[in-house]
Length: 619
Image 1 (cartoon, rainbow, N blue to C red):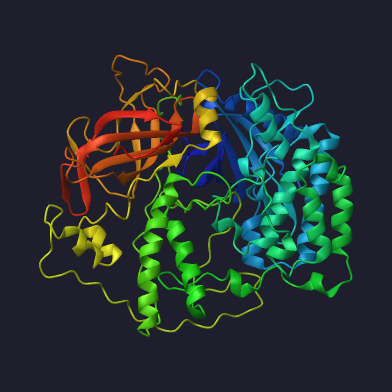
Image 2: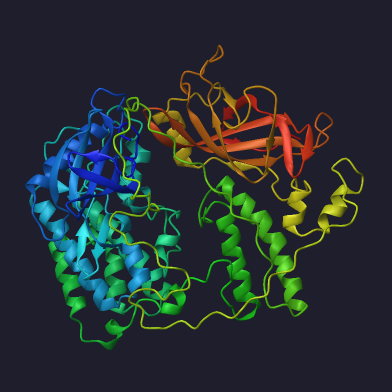
């Protein structure tokens, strides 16, 4: 349906029929389409010209079309046409790349160091061509490079690109891009000059060299780079960052040294240009050493266990490490940072991991060969429709023979079944042994309630999954003190203009719940709050109606006014209509739990939330 962010399968766009959505980024949504039996990709801008388009996605779409129509390189995506949808949004028809993103390519084909060097030499050549045309890509990352099935790389997504004397489309100090790939000098500029009126960071070739260094480091040191997208940025202090060869002893010394140069904190220590980088990579691709014929990672390190199974591990230490990683995944994939603030989302994983690690030790001591089943991973909030899009037009003819396919990256092939060997692998996995289902943990015949005197002691005797079901959540998801990270503080005070000492926001704490009255909150689960359509009097204009606050539910201390504990919600991201998403630290507290029902805390759903620099539970 035209008018929605993603076009429905069967929608006709000037002769191209949409078959499925591929991915949605910050500036556009990409779809696969067909015309006369041939596959294409169609990228649609998120806004039309006359809409509330603070991100200038319409202007960026026109710029990307103009760039793609004027450049011609075998390793850069090609445009096949463009036009306007009936609702006024720009679309661009692109060649369809049948292959994988760089991360998926590593996981699916198990390339050797020689193959990685060859692919990156061609990427460097493509970026050097852009630079010769006066164009800076500004968003080089693993997901913005595709690798065809014949092994040829293709640079995609020029939505963030710019060129000399181009119109300034960014209203923030730093240009668009992905935080993990930003150079240290960009971060330093933001902290030193980002608050000055009209400050704009002068993005340079050295920034793109650093981004390529991050891409190479990810591929050389992580067997499954696409499975762990939420990682701290390399622009942070990296005193503890291991050289690639130390993180992965298989990496040849010369390759590791080149990556260290690219990741140098001083721009002058990086290669002088992408042409120089291309020559260095080409030399590595033709290096006679036998170590370059080795696969970057053993296929066994990249093989995914069948669904519902646990990969075998040798020894208690290995199992404990696996369990720790799984519990961090339960905490929404937030990694532990070596420096600075620990994200609130990771608190769930820390508490639960401690409980389950002890449980595993007991199981192993009894001779059991399997770790207990983990509770299901809570899914994140779904992305809302983009504000400012025009009302939906009547649906155009859809083809019932074209059902939607699962969302994948642009040009990626459907994922192989978990039990099948990965394409390109030289190792044939053995069929997994039949597994015994883990025994279901039993609760006592007589379950206690949170008001019973022996309830806390009884909770300690239960496995975690059973404890959650009976409302034993205060200990597992206890609200702990935290410091707001500098990036969130800057976003609140500078980008959003909030007065942290005085601003308060009236919220529906969970947008799924009623506007007034009680609602059931699951401790540890993600939650999305919403600013109501009608504002109450006060300083609330900085969070307009329909603003979304994304966070997680915790339980605070029991007090005389809250004998069952207090509900605490820590929101770490805000999504403002027409502005986009920003990291924040906003807390809703002083909300007494009225009762527990099947592991959920019944509390008020309409309450005030406060931006904070640091927070600790009231005593």
